[in-house]
Length: 83
Image 1 (cartoon, rainbow, N blue to C red):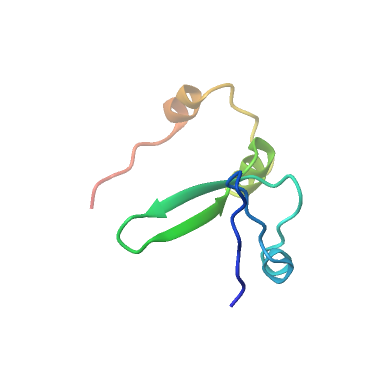
Image 2 (image 1 turned 135 degrees about the vertical axis):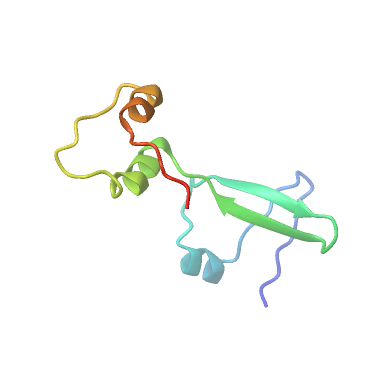
């Protein structure tokens, strides 16, 4: 297990083996959360707008024109039928 020491400024250094495994590089941003029950602190990478767009672009059919807003998308969408 790797040990992390907190500085007097509240800063911490993630050990190199963990950074390499998690592919963490300088400048990356993470959201932090604390679980009071377990005492765990979790870090979750925050995605940039471009990363989010890349992630969702796989759901769009090739040749689909870009939408100007979400209202336009929902207006064109066929309503779902309940089962």
